[in-house]
Image (cartoon, rainbow over all chains, first blue to last red; front, side, top):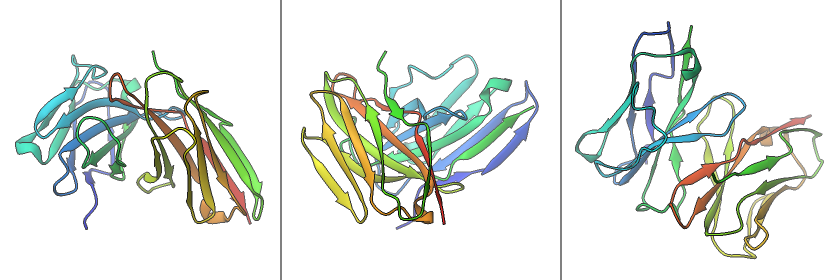
Amino acid sequence: EAGVAQSPRYKIIEKRQSVAFWCNPISGHATLYWYQQILGQGPKLLIQFQNNGVVDDSQLPKDRFSAERLKGVDSTLKIQPAKLEDSAVYLCASSLSPKYPTGELFFGEGSRLTVL
Amino acid sequence: ILNVEQSPQSLHVQEGDSTNFTCSFPSSNFYALHWYRWETAKSPEALFVMTLNGDEKKKGRISATLNTKEGYSYLYIKGSQPEDSATYLCAFCSGNTGKLIFGQGTTLQVKP
């Protein structure tokens, strides 16, 4: 079974530039998550989708971050314009479970962003 | 604000040593507790998902216990091996929100 695919693995940009990350979850997984992991901290949930609807985006900085999940499958996370404090690993995860994660999350390898 | 704390932040042990870490979480509105292992340059992978007070789970040399009444979970590694070197993350799911909140992780380094 193919895992969660993410790209790019690494991205270096200058502040005020834009960047987009892509995620393809495991086939059949209805729930998709985007987490931001800053060095030394635990992963922080940015947005959670159930199929193509948003369940939780309370911690997404909506003035610069946006995310969509097309047709309930692939998802894209965009940052525009980027700030220095956006340097982090962006993790995508998917799950069979509906809203409450009683089952495990399956993670991609992450996209590491460096903003100079 | 829900807080999930892990201790210690980092740990260095010799091969063959046994070790344990702690995850502390709110004792109210418990729904589930997850443990993940995250090796460098790889994706985090699930170790355990625990839902019942008193739960004990085991996978090879790794085991975990859960106390929802006092709000803690222990992860034990028996006879640590260099391949156990990783960051171990716990995550608490509140029954109120369904949101999975991660601790900051415990980074384990096992020296051969």
